[in-house]
Length: 293
Picture 1 (cartoon, rainbow, N blue to C red):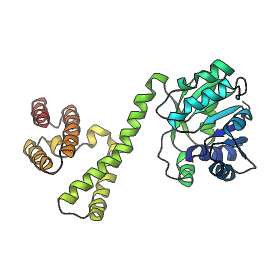
Picture 2: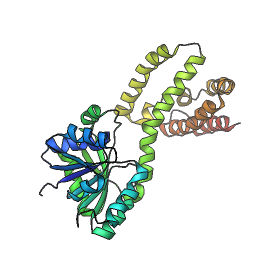
Picture 3: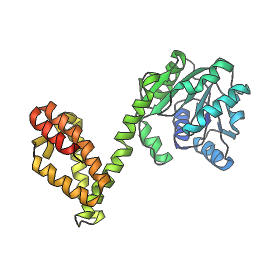
Picture 4: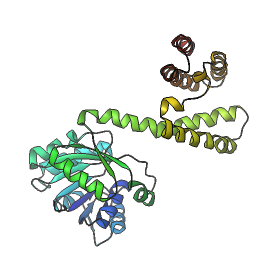
């Protein structure tokens, strides 16, 4: 399969990093398109090999694959404008990088220009371009769309070191919610744990430095044993009195944190019962305690 020329629309971290890695893998990056001239020029310079920085419309016209690496809210509007104004090559491949949206938001490209459409979402967190270039390699990339486009982006994903996985269009939102819980809400959970430690009289720095090895060991346990077997603590042991004391103190500190504790505790009770470390009867008692207002 011949490698398609690529236009990167959006000079952000993900688009720029894919452009850098794709260029290294032998793809021709035809152009980078964006609204902000300085950021677009900087992205083109980072990709190198004489990549041109230009407007979104100009960039889209230059390539066989158009990669929309812009905010979720902008994807559909940009695609509609490019399609209606015939700024896309006929039968080009149009792809976006959103985790939350399916390829359906690119339907206008198919309807107006007979383009193949798909989405590809690298499942990683990308704080900077340098870190993104490192982290993309080895990351899983979830792909969906029409058959032709998916085969092309799977090849691109493999070429730049990612592990492509097909997902159905209708499952995209739940997939993204899972990613949010694993990444964003982990940050929230750690922030909440640190806040509770501060309420216990432990300074913020010491709280994190002491909790970090526990978190790391827990992730290692999940990796080696799975979530059910990695579950420890008072609910896994059936220590109802300890859970009750936790709730009492949490309610005196922060009702929102108490609500978080309750919600996660309900799932922990289910996991513990499934694991067999507590009986179904004890799990019901714990759930009843956690549901009390």
